[in-house]
Length: 94
Length: 332
Image (cartoon, rainbow over all chains, first blue to last red; front, top):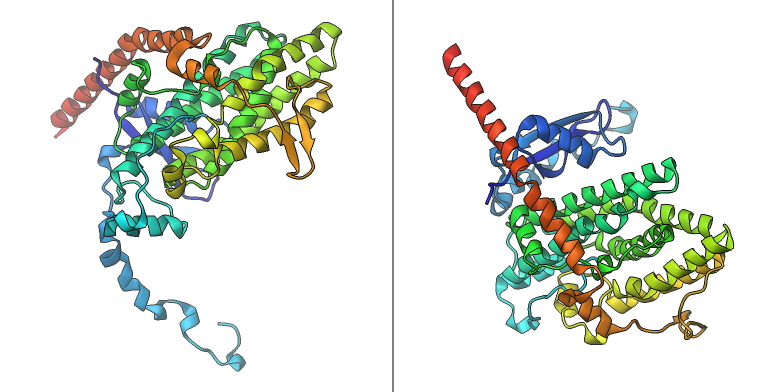
């Protein structure tokens, strides 16, 4: 049996000025063909102006079980949001 | 539907659930999406692989009955449209394989199961497309039924599946409209063309109704899938919605739905209609439909004939990578 083409994750910039965004994955033998396949699979209706592909095995992801330790500490730091501070009305817009 | 007879795992009562399973069910009940790599019951994972895989296979096999007419489309414009639609089906299959792969199964494994017959695809694609009006009927009825199913699946609990459905639904309404457009042209054409349109409707009506799967009373797999929000509506609910939506569209075309029992029921605000012949459905699922052998044969042949090409591209990629690595070493 022949071996499977590697899996690539595809990121598309939808319009100028926006970040590339993950849209899905596909199989391709190499990066060049991954870009070509991504064009056909993910931008048939003008969805993009730029494509990134990266091998799925090269992505390191945070573990779902680390969600608490990673993200909960920021919950208590409400002073990071401007609405935490009361500015008197006579000071005007700040 | 595109996944008609998906075997689900046995339903557990609330008391039988482990703490992990209960927490999982509560997340689903709150409407949270489950994402890859998060903890999920083995049954949830297995059922999803079956359902998403079957859905993907249906998109891919679904290219065959329509692909049959690409070289025979009556005008260049119709040909270009049909090509775009069939290409979309390939894309939809790929979105779904990609969603299935996040569950820990590879695309090649799924394809191997399609090819050896252990995974199914929708029964509808085992019917032949005999004349050009069939391409209209497929778009109108088959894609119409598919959309009916897929719209609700946008709310499914598994994130990658839900996102694939959202994308597919966006693209698919063009498919149904192009089918109806063909039907309008045929139904408003010569008497002979209209007869072809009626003939296509006659042949595709009941197979389209079968797409939603067996009646709720015989559907053994629904309860657990609905609790997990892998399935949102029951087979009969969707079938009823499909009939209610389609009858006025047929009337507009001046075509007759081939069902003597079709009648508006004021009380339920919907149509009463005849059930399809379920023995035919189970025969087709078992591999004995008019085109089962041809469809699966075409898929297996394409896979086998393409092996040298897939291997060749991979060998080229490996060589090029080795050359790049050697150049890097030389430059250092």
